[in-house]
Image (tube, rainbow, N blue to C red; front, side):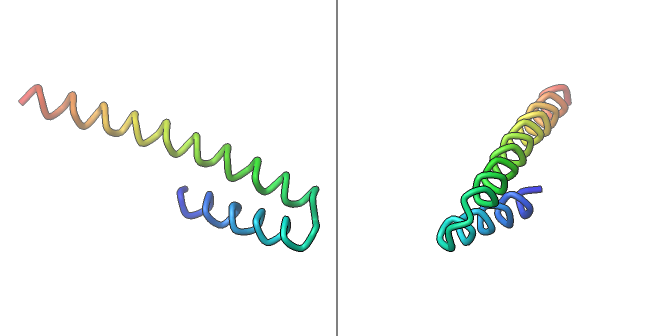
Length: 56
C-alpha cells in the first residue's frame, strides 16, 4: 500500500510541474488517503504484535 502512495505522490508532483492542477490535486488527495490508511494498518499491526509478545 505504501508503494501506491508513492506512485500517486509522484504522479501528483509530475502533474503539478506540467500544470495539470486538477490531476495533481486528485492524485495528491489519493496519496494522502492511502498514506493515512497505511499508518492506521501499521499501528494496528504493531499493537497486535506487542500484545501477543507480552502474553508469552
